[in-house]
Image (cartoon, rainbow over all chains, first blue to last red; front, top):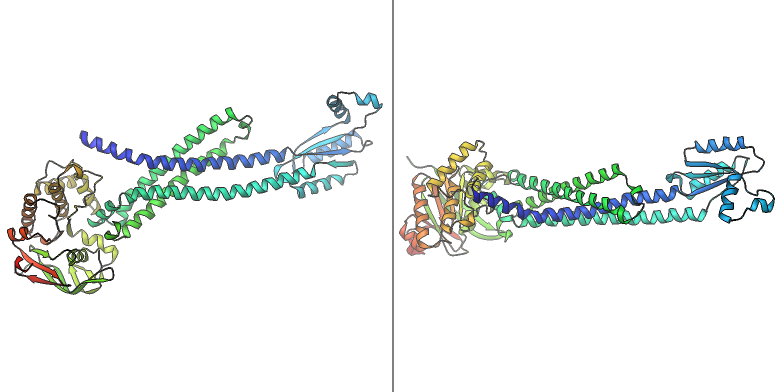
Length: 290
Length: 229
């Protein structure tokens, strides 16, 4: 290769860089939204799984019976965690909170033995909770099941609203991504429209002309996707330094899937765009190109 | 023995979009002949050439070029028709993003050449023929207008065409360079390639005489000399 050739090739590569960067930034935006989507789901699960029901037992029930019911609840499919709190422990905790030894003051312990139940996130809806409550209440040993009904309703209401907004936004973001990438590629091909026509004039078939453009946009989509993934990985690495407790929401497997989806989306969008645009210019008459 | 007819139009009508440009066109061009296509700007010279290379469909009348029937030509046949033609344009239409060598290599690759050795040999041959043997590494914009037109002619010659269609090939060139290009085209036609060249350059026609077709008032007829211009 002569020196001049080397220079020319270098120049040509540089001219594609802006479009690769545009693709990368759009994909990064899409990826950020993906991260929000994944973490939003995890956040709502996290809130739902920390919703607590307290099951109180009659004072005359033997500890063995309580333990039997505890075990029964613990092994139910809706249970994430269930822990038995006997009334002495509860009194100690309560006294600590109160700052006063109320058992001594009263002369007896007014608290009841209880089981604290946390349900799995998919059971944390008002209807399912009500059903679980009913089922537990069937045990004659249980005197009461207490939880904050309004909170579980509110959580579900908010999750539903936020979920709808997120789905709407994700459709909008995807459309924005497709439009921007498509425009980038179309501009690239618009600049080469006379080239495409010239190729037709010398007897090249459509498929022969399209192939290199599609291969190029495959690579651009791939490079753009990889750059976007690096940006996302950087962000995910640095974010926990600024926002505490974020790390616990991280799920490497889900992020890996997100990265793969972003790269594949970049490749597919840019390949399809370049196929459509090249075909468009191939079918145009030469006079319409000016 | 009479030479083989390579371009033939009978009672052909040329449209540009919905506009009738030329009607009752009868042309017969044999192998190795050199024809000028003259007429004022807008008289239909380019449209007639476009009909011949398949850019405009022949909707009425009969036409045959390089064994392709123009009236039944399908879009997918057009690339194969163009492989039998060499087309030379006023504005060159080189692939501006690659070197002269790559421009020529693209055509050979597109027309089914596989061996890089054969490709290299053929490119050297045609560049030699147009006098540009040492410029294969240049980008089109690094060449003068005359040199670019030589590359276009070299490109047209790659697949040994029976016909070269030239649409004002000297339109952007100065007289000296135009003469060089004309000498080259005449030489090519002497080697057996039919050439149909649109032009409105009287000087050239006087200096390099050939047969003349004239587009005028919606018809094409044979003219004896430039005096009929």
